[in-house]
Length: 316
Image (cartoon, rainbow, N blue to C red; front, side):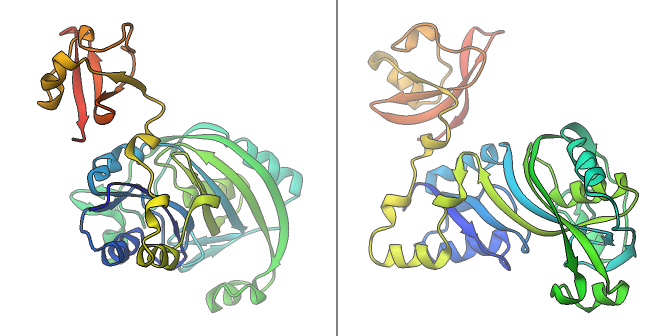
């Protein structure tokens, strides 16, 4: 079984679950998990956890992300992207200066209402299940943060020649403005909803036209490999060089090596005193990576009440 992280380039048309299913067939192992859903229309970085590294999946979804997004101004759809049904058509003849000013105003923290077509659960059902049944349910806004929006570029698009589908042309077959931008945001941010909110702030509508995830938890798009490349590498026995060890994505946490005489406490997943470590002054504010004999065994967090480090996640 392969253990580690694989930086996959998810192509358009695949769901994140499709990628996992195909990798299970290619690598001939079941223990595989992705680290954050990408919509089928989106492409780009999708870190995938293999074997023991699947224990990291939940942690990696917590990281911030960087996206290259293209927004179509003047359209509102039920999915908040161009794969959906057109609901309303609005103004697009807004000055470039006003567009850029409004977009830049979204940098910072704000309460974002998630889209109906999302995997968030309400009452035990996913929102998209309600949406597909034609139902609308009350959603709770989520606190997100937009760290930066850069490289904002505004250009015009003839929707009748854009290959968006007949409904967009029927709605209004004219020329509309598109905005491309680089967005660095916190976990839980929906770029579709960001486009929606930008459109509203401009007195119109906004829908996502294209999305590419450029970076996620330190994995960059230039290093990502597609499924057909992964299969070719695996068949030639050359995939190992592309598998990253688990701790490669945990470098933000301090490393702490356990002393030989206390190794059994670590191996049994017990709480640890700071005197059990080879060095003094272990970080008590954040989790630490705990090693024995060069191997990562777990993440530990100091708990002030008991004066000991408690296991957060054990890997071996």
